[in-house]
Amino acid sequence: MMGRRKGTWLVACVLATVAFWTSGVPGSPEQSESSVVTAAPGDIVHLPCYSEGSVMPSGARWLKDGIEVEPGGGGQPRVQVLSDGSLHFPRVAEGDEGVYRCEATLPGNMTWRARVLLQVASGPENVSLAIVPSTVLPNGTLVAHRGSSVSFHCAAVSYPSQSLAWSFAGTLVDAAGGTPLASAPSAPWLDFRVKDVQPEAQGFYMCLANNTLTHVVAGTSAQLLVYYASDRHPECSWLQSSDPTWVHFNCAWPGCYPDPELRWSQIGDEEAEQGRVLASEATSVLRVSLNRSLLAGGQTLRCAGHHSALAAGREAACSFTLEAPRPHVSPLMWAQEGNSVTLACSESASVPPAITTWSRVAEGAALAPGPKYALSRDGATYSLTIANVSRDDVGTYFCRSENALALRRAEVYLSVTAASDYTGVIVGIFVAALIVGLAAVTARLLFANRHRICLGRPFGSSDGDTGDVLSLVDSDEEQIFQAVPRLPPVTDPHPTTLVQVHRLPSGERENTGNPEAREEPPDLVTL
Ligand SMILES: *[C@@H]1O[C@H](CO)[C@@H](O)[C@H](O)[C@H]1NC(C)=O
Ligand SMILES: *[C@@H]1O[C@H](CO)[C@@H](O)[C@H](O)[C@H]1NC(C)=O
Ligand SMILES: *[C@@H]1O[C@H](CO)[C@@H](O)[C@H](O)[C@H]1NC(C)=O
Image (cartoon, rainbow, N blue to C red; front, side, top):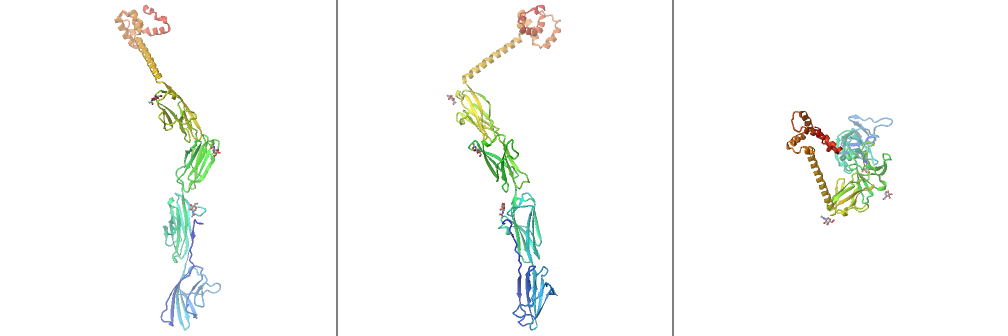
């Protein structure tokens, strides 16, 4: 038992300080002696009266505080005057202390006087120490939790009185001479309290009791540990091994004292809440290594941390759910010969993160960066840029994404257009655009002049007629209808023109449905 060292030093001894003097020359009628006797309760005590030579006093009497001490009669006497004149206490008790005087009659009728101071002292005894609340480790060390309010209690028994003092030191060796924390000059017990215990309070606490009469010191000490758990959660991370089918999972929970109990478990869809325990250890960092045969997408890997400083039943944990890689690409890409093209592959699903590379052959090596290929990464997008694209670059490219769970590929087919083909396409598009444009212009012109085209032949001869017609056609339909009622007053030589304009849309529609209608000037004729 090294943790709590308890030592009690008890003095149960008799100190006799004798101050001896003689007054006058030998043979004078009065001689005296003065002494001090200290005893512990229960001790056998002799208070000496006359101890010179071999002469026995013929009689002796003892007075305490001026009152004659009555030797006890019968049974077990409390005090006796022995034949040599000394006062005998078979068991001295608390309360027997005091100044005792002896008067002995020596041969020659001389009187001998002695004065003895009897001190009764005991302790310190039963020095005890308590630190509350705390738990006790098997080696006796006490444990408090950070942030708790802790009381330190010390008590001892001393007679006639004692002083008490608490001290603190980082090591047991220093404990006696440690930092003073509290003291009381005369008290049966001494308490103090630490409201918010911190790790700095960890160390050895010693309580010393000092007998105020004898200055005998007794003490006891205890080691206090302050336990704490981190306020943060454990951190789960992974480390890809050089073999892609193996992965190391790391769980770190620093900032706890002592080290927490960390446990990695693997929870599949069909498994129980706690899953299968992979590893469990008292450590601040716990690593497990798993290979592809033990891993599947959708599984959860969880690291739970337990610590005695956490409330009962509580745990701190981190976890992640495994996912196989899912590379994503645009399946078809075009590039013009001589230009560069960038193929992009996004991979954001994979847990742990995949290593994503580009290759030309499904099982082939990854394309290395160089003058031809540039590889870049922007977040979850892995890009391959092919410079100076030629016909040789036509074909399938593989975006290969692998983590410890699986290897997945996504394919891109690259088509390369020759520069000349491209010119041809441009020319073709230009020509097509030109044709479409011409057609549009023509159509617009035809629309704008459709009346002239329709009516031009009958009335083309007159410039004035044309002007009238155009002004009406440019108006919208509503205006045309409004204009119709005003027709009667118009004394135009060609009133039919206006009617014809109004009817023209139906005529056009008829034209599309019935080609013969075009050749039908009867409308005109009837009007
Ligand atoms: C008692 O045990 C605790 C924890 O096991 C240890 O930290 C401490 O140092 C031990 N104390 C002694 C005095 O051996
Ligand atoms: C995967 O790990 C298990 C258990 O550690 C082992 O039995 C198995 O042989 C390993 N498989 C491979 C391919 O390394
Ligand atoms: C592009 O490639 C062609 C052959 O495919 C080569 O003749 C030409 O010099 C290259 N151009 C550049 C800028 O590298």
